[in-house]
Length: 396
Image (cartoon, rainbow, N blue to C red; front, side):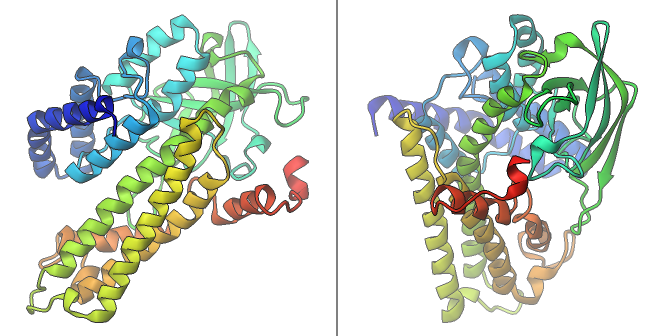
């Protein structure tokens, strides 16, 4: 590790020493989803003051221009110290870099500061009922009316739309153009006439995803990022950043889950039984550690390409495909480690990890769907590594 990177890590650790205990205390007293969201916004505001909320942004926009190595170090230390997630991470990681690359100075001045400090939270309006894996088939339309764009359509699986202030969305503004053309990247205010957010209840009982209906929502043309009808090219920046951060966030989550599982295995249950004393379960824990390391090493291979200025390769799909199955297997292992107590829900007496193992198991049933299904990842690997032909619908 270079002296510069070591200094970066030491500064981040020192800042956490001074600020993390207070926010952990706030989370401990937050009971409702609304309370936790308020704490997350407060935490983001504090991190933005220290220029830690968006370290990948340039300094002139409140970031640190952190290198890929520094970003990796940041995520690893964050996982080790149990740093809470930020309320506006979707905006910070996806929309922010897009605005920095393609936005006008006026757009950057208006949207980046509140995005950075969490006073405005964003969601992503890409997927539609008939345009998920084949995103370019989207049908949400935008018609120019004077100096406004009138948007109508439906978005689905929109994470965090129920608390978002803004949505960055793909809208078809030229229905006669080929499907990857005639699309615009539009910033839509969520608290405006014609926007209807309907939560989707999940098997876990949560409602983190939403349907968003847009009924003649009027948006100023100044909210179009890049040129009108050039949104597909603008979106490449968004998707590139999504791929870049996927490995780091995934590694952070898997490491935290494995650490909690090992801790539970070492802790006697209410009957005094330790799962760590079972050799079969110890073998599965060892395999879990190996799998998490494989995700890390494959991610590092892709990161090495980025560090040398090359484009990320199919390793991103390998990390997504393998990592999402590892996530499911770790939660299945956790239920077996905790025995009958692990299936107790939140609030139940004797529930390990405050009842969150059952919740995590239910949530991870969707891991192989969200963010690109396992089938799509296999298609990418088949086409780009094995040289197999593309599906006919992909070029339709």
